[in-house]
Structure formats: C-alpha cells, structure tokens
Length: 157
Image 1 (cartoon, one colour):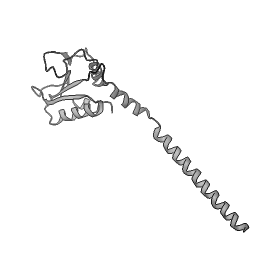
Image 2: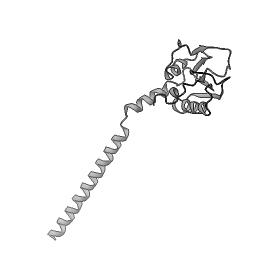
Image 3: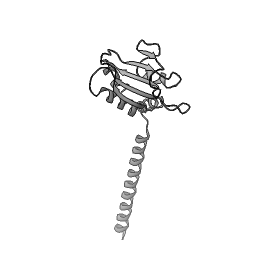
Image 4: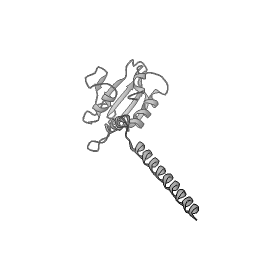
C-alpha cells in the first residue's frame, strides 16, 4: 500500500509539473505575440497619415509618364494597399518623356496633400510639384510617374 500511495503522489507531481510548464509556455508565447516592434509602429503611423480629416480622403490619379509597362499599376497598388489612398484612375500620361516624377495638386484644401508629398520625399516648393485646379475635379492630386520611378516603388520599406 505504501508503494502504491508513493506511485500516485509521484504521478500527481508529474502531472502538476507538466501542467505548470504548459501554462508558463503559453504565457511566454502570448507575451511575445503582443509585443509591438518599432517597425510595426512606423507602419501604422504611415497609414494613419491618410486618415480622414473632416471626412475628406485623398483621391489620386496615377499617370504613367515613363513608358514602362505596368509601372502605373504597381504604383497604384502600393499606394492603395500600403497607405489606403483612393486611386480614382490609372492610365498613361500625355507622353512618356517625363524624366522625373511630377505631382500636380488639384485640390489645395485637402489636408492630406502634404502627407503624400512627405511620403514621396517632396515638398510643396519643389520644382516637380505644381498646382492646377483645372484638371479633373474628382482627383485631389495627380502623380505622373517619370523615369525615376524606381525611387518611389519601394517607398519606406
């Protein structure tokens, strides 16, 4: 009887130890999942640059001005998926001779304009940024992709 009780006690101790190990392992895994890395914070911040201000969103037209097939679609996909921008059209520009990417600001009153210029590494005072309110009123901004497109396709990665 003494050996039987000792065997039961040892078995129960092994079960308790295994249970304790399992719980500690689960808690450690949960802590590592909920830990926020700095790179995740930056990514969230980038997307929040384009949250609505007074229910306004930034509507963008992407025009391929470099002549490389598919660049406009790649650029549109990146701006939409990574930054949540509303791409209202993607098509070819009037010509394929744009050496540098050009930004045409149509709606100056949208507060998100400066955010996209920051993402593109531009400012309102740059030579390749112009204002023209006579373009399509459905767009707030047009981006005409130039032959320097490789500088923009991997933005902030």
